[in-house]
Amino acid sequence: MPQFFIQFGKGTPQIAYKIITGKCTTVPWHCGDCRPGCPNKAISTAHAIDPGRCTECVGAYDKPQCAQVCPAGACVPDPAHRETRAQLLRKWRKLHPGEKPAPGTY
Ligand code: SF4
Ligand code: SF4
Image 1: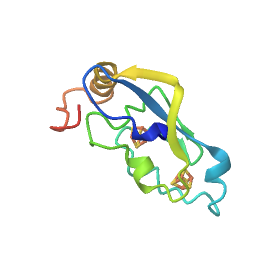
Image 2: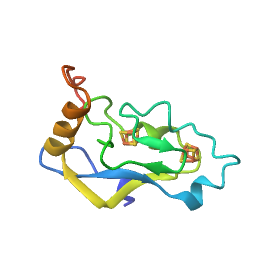
Image 3: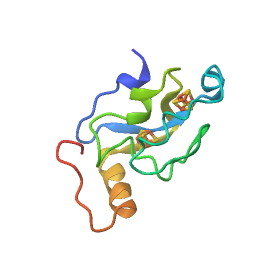
Image 4: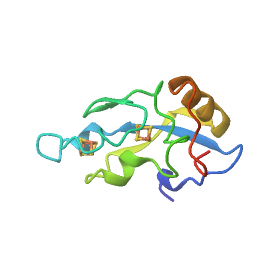
């Protein structure tokens, strides 16, 4: 089963996302479609996701938005950055002080 089908669930290890540059570069000029939809501004360039900002979209969406829109399948989980949903939600709260996470996203 591909890693990006790992299911959400309380206590389930989650994995911050990364961009596989080899796949990304198959799209001319790196389309950049992944960047505007990131709720945490984690994609600092078309080629890199900051694991310190990626919450796998926990707190904002029920699915990782970059993976949803990438035409190359280049946005994939990064096994080097495993976190629980609780940790991802704490990260989201630090990134969005005073805001409430969207229902059904954590
Ligand atoms: S959406 Fe995919 S192909 Fe386009 S820039 Fe982002 S990672 Fe690269
Ligand atoms: S999974 Fe969500 S938070 Fe992480 S880089 Fe992709 S769009 Fe941004």
